[in-house]
Amino acid sequence: MAAAVDGEEEKEQKLEETLVQRVERITGKRAHPFLRRGVFFAHREFDKILDSYENGDKFYLYTGRGPSSEALHLGHLVPFLFTKYLQDAFKVPLVIQLTDDEKCIWKNISVEESRRLARENAKDIIACGFDITRTFIFCDFDYVGGNFYQNMVRIAKCVTLNQARGIFGFTGEDHIGKVSFPPVQAAPSFPTSFPHLFGEKRDIHCLIPCAIDQDPYFRMTRDVAPRIGFHKPALIESLFFPALQGESGKMSASDPNSAIYVTDSLKDIKNKINKYAFSGGGATIEEHRKNGANLEVDVPVKYLTFFLEGDEELAQIKQEYGTGRMLTGEVKGRLIEVLSGMVDRHKKARAAVTDEMVDAFMAVRPLPQMFS
Ligand code: TRP
Image (cartoon, rainbow, N blue to C red; front, side, top):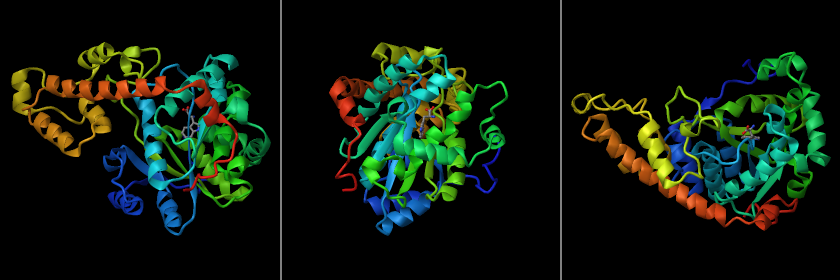
């Protein structure tokens, strides 16, 4: 994909260790493992968000999900788990966009089905533990209109079709639904899209945690922002979550064995990890004992890097496995424990989310305590 709209937007910055330490100092909390371990590895002006936060200026968080499937896999949880940490650590409001329109536009999903999936996905998101006094969840089919739509039109007028082609790769054969979508994802970056939260205030900063593949949308948004009188949204961006088959594979809804889903049973988890998780271990025990595992390509180690709590245990596993003292089966065994605990907790939390709670999170309402 080509550079930003007018070519001025630079490349994203690497999220340096010093920035992680700064987050710990400001929040008085240990940084989330995703930060400490480089899962969120890149940013745009996150340092500026911290500067203004230290000066007493407020910001809000914005993230989202395209509801393309019934069940979420573990990779889908990554931005939400991280956003929850940021919300708790900085005590700031959060808006979550469910792009039911996007998935209807891009996939073979009807408007009705996409709306249903958005509500189902909202339950999984709420199960991550968001604070209802600081969180507004909305789906586009219901919320787009009013001030939000006014911002969409302001944004749309700043981007030519040629620029959109450069950024998103649209071709003449794409239907115009696709071309019309980017302003929908851009609009939540601007506070006046949420008058019930921020009134007419234009000077509130926005921080967007997302996976790196969303960057084109926000390069466009950042380019447009000053031209329509807003701050550029800041970004904090994560690596992709690898498929069970390894970096080369892509997690796909059509292959249930490419990912662990939050709906999987203990048996599914065991079976998938033992059978499909790509191992960097030696071909034979002798070879493994001699050369150790290749940690660069080993999926169980990658998954543990995302989800194992203890830094020391992680370091120890890497050391033992990398030198061949620990075997793939043992590492997989530990991963099965960790993931089944996680999935089990998620299932319980999701079962406790009622339709009334979904309505409450999605109600268009002021959040009086959102900054405290
Ligand atoms: N386009 C994203 C997806 O397909 C959904 C999304 C909308 C999003 N707004 C966002 C993701 C903001 C991250 C941040 O899943």
